[in-house]
Length: 347
Length: 217
Image (spheres, rainbow over the protein chains, first blue to last red):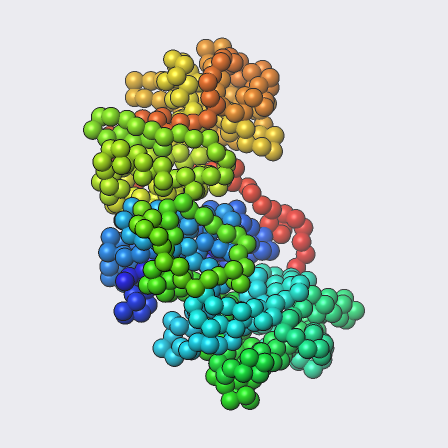
């Protein structure tokens, strides 16, 4: 089954073709980072406009790279949530209508489930059960994964997501947008020992996170220091070290608590090289194994949507022709695949 | 929704705010089933390309693009203002229609359309502006569109167009279809990737520079 995946939940337009027999056939991505840079963050209306402008050309390009015709697609998977409503509508209406026209099934995919399954795009993929650290601009969650749609939320952030804290801190340090990668880059030139921040919520039991106070601590340090670029780099390094170590402590705790060995890390922040290295050390210490998708599949992309959709479609699930998006959609509400009743999934 | 098949026109129409995405495909299914057609048997797809509510315009655009991409057919983007004018012409027998859609933020989407031998024709250009800045016309023009309910006095004072009893200020797919069919016949369809919304309001956010945000470097 050849599945077209469409990702438009935020500021990346991602298209991919995934074959349940052959694996990933092709994927293309248009990032809007440059568009939103001058605004200092994602402008939802501008993001939605860009998706509409780009998705058709990207779909053609993706099909061409996979050396196949649009009419030979067997199913369509599109991100139905969570995400920005206008952006989600663009891809959901496009994807569902494309499937309807071709008379093939379609499925609305949960964006975070797709992130969580993204390591399965790699040759070395983990078996269930495993612990997943979902870490992005909107999420910081530790999830026990026992199978497709079987997710137990072990820990969550009480305030800012890790990526959000990166972005906000970067903004206040004057590093601009996108904050995460820029702060990480500044940190590489800094000394993490100059400003040592607390590791929030690690001195008490539990798997929840809180990054808001850390962000404030970094800003306070910045405001009371002599503001040159060396200081900014040192604060960035100290901040990043705190986030990375905090995430590692909680991951280790989660593996031990659930008595599991396999750790998956996914989401945009999973592309942070310091975090990847530190998590590798963490799992090595407990004789476990780390699975993280290649960098391009950590950030938003169409390949993970095609894969997640393909897994559910294969299990008989599909979405009917009433197009529904869910801008807010807790991962904990996901269920194992439900077989579609009658032919409503087709058209 | 409207469908022209074998010279016969069928249409479905419902006013249900925020339900476009849910209703779209089931309504199309009904229309096609009545005509005994499959989606891949459609020859061309016309859609209201705006101006109008941004998300609504995008839902229509994405659907038209998807049908065109899948069925490998041309798309005819039709102005919402032209469609409203055509409806007033069709239902009220008018020849010159000044259309104003309430664009919120104290502005209207404006377009003046008249009948001609080649079909419906735009006078000047479509624009988004305060009611006080619409075009000056005369009393041979009649008013249509939601903007007249909100800014009737100002619009009338500036444009000189006449307020007449119109049944409905919204566009109807029958008129989108009629204009689109003519475009198709004239070879004015475009490929799916060139089927673009027309928002008119293009300045939707302020950049950091415009907001005066300082950058350290």
